[in-house]
Image (cartoon, rainbow, N blue to C red; front, side):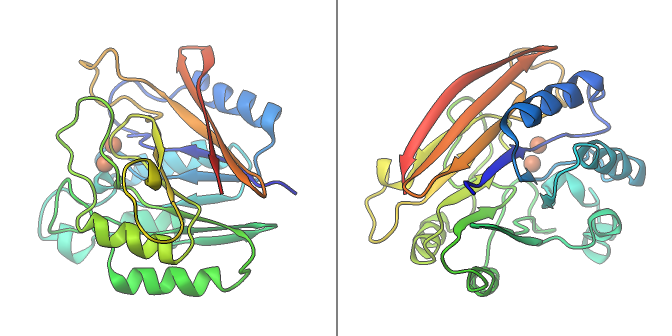
Length: 262
Ligand SMILES: [Fe+2]
Ligand SMILES: [Fe+2]
């Protein structure tokens, strides 16, 4: 079976206009047409890490009735010390049990990594120890497509942002290439952007495809033009294919299509 997955991010439940029926119905339309086997949610599920926000975000995502890989974003931890350091992921774990879930489906392994660090605010980090855990997960079914999920982005956003990409990203990209990762999915910048590493960085080994998706939520109502949407990925034996969906209200459209050799 060709793996198909739906990537959403940055719900920011609790900020801006609430994610109403229109959001769910747009996602349901995409699911009904394209039949993804998995839903990836790459963090900032809540805006202020409140229990009610986590519950609402989980209710929305689970209503789509797909297996889910969810990782925390920088908004999914307490904003201030001491709880920021002492109870960093408590609220997230209460709902999702773990911050680094792995799912192994037919021909597809997806591993979530928590890139959030309580001593950093906007920046993220992935450590060598985390990558060692990724390697173990990919040994479960070595021939399957390999997808890693983080909240923070590796490649910079195409449009305006002050958010810095993952720290030590060159080392990280090289390590992901050595692990023969096909695809890295992220959020945080609230913009859709997709590129193969070889398009901007000539390294040895596999050219990892790095991607961010636009948010489902729009926590800063002043940014009227900020896109909302999601991505649908199909991973064939020799090609990765991405459809980018954007919407205004119920007007949902494919606004970009990208293909990369595997
Ligand atoms: Fe966000
Ligand atoms: Fe974020």
